[in-house]
Length: 164
Image 1 (cartoon, rainbow, N blue to C red):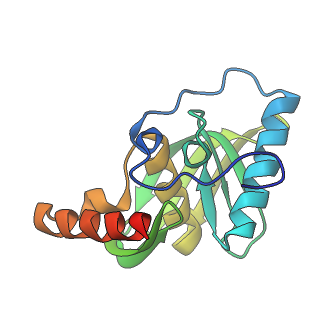
Image 2 (tube, rainbow, N blue to C red; image 1 turned 90 degrees about the vertical axis):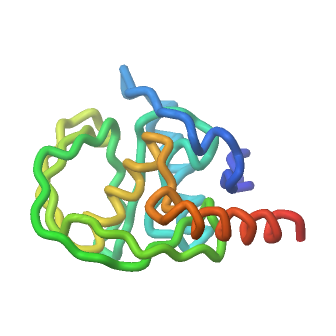
């Protein structure tokens, strides 16, 4: 739990499977939430975090793939290009790594924490992290990218971790 009362939700927490609702208005509470999410992400040495991972079903993500903090409210992918397969992990699925094919380059839109419209082209790791976090907003996890047999094995592995 971070200093503001949020804690990282770990699979099989059901909130991780729910759809996040669009943010209708950016308020001081929204800005505070973004700060708290960033604190929690950094505390767990992550490079991305979505609001459902702290139990809030709002379309807000924060990411920092080495280029500084990028908070995005209501992110939408406008264009995708290229393809690359890389291994991904997830703060909500400790010790699980999954190979996932994702686009190399993206154009996305959304809003900053100041309410300004954002339209950016991103690539590489930053694009991958944003797509991973958008998956969280849609209730999708990295284990959804594997075969049913591998998924069952990973779920068993996660169950053992949460029992310890």
